[in-house]
Amino acid sequence: MQFSAQEDIDVPIETVFNMVSDFERFERKALRRGVDVRRVTGSVVPQAGITWETEFKIRGKPRHIIIEMTECDRPSLMRFQSSSKGMNGDTVIELLALSQRRTRLRVETSLGAKTLPARLLLQSLKLGQSRFRRQFQTRLSEFARDMEERHLHGV
Image (cartoon, rainbow, N blue to C red):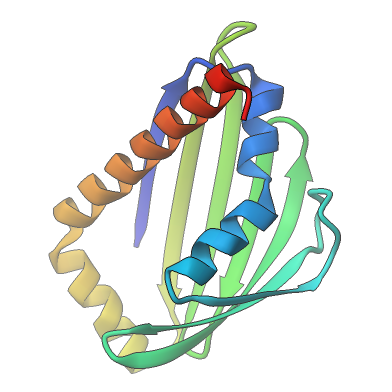
């Protein structure tokens, strides 16, 4: 299953990259939402090899996912591989400078199942695919507006 979203942001590409790679901020957000997230390897500087372990519940079942940044090309690309007991995922974050003050942010994710229960979970996601894609785009749009606000106010 693949899905993607993109958003144009009125923020320079370097600033967008810095905000997107602010891993400590994302870790704190995840913790507030009940996700146990722990950086296993790597520094705060975005680079290939940074790894996180996460635990959370989906449909009442605990899930353990390992996420690794496999590629980082500042300021235009970050790639993450994720794996769990039954699924693999690949997420690519691409940034494109449209002008000195405007950046296009594109996020593309693909998920693949390794087990029958994971295939069933993916199948249920596919059934609600249009709603899921809308939510994904909405969240990326909200994130983009938040970046514009933070940039505007120097946060």
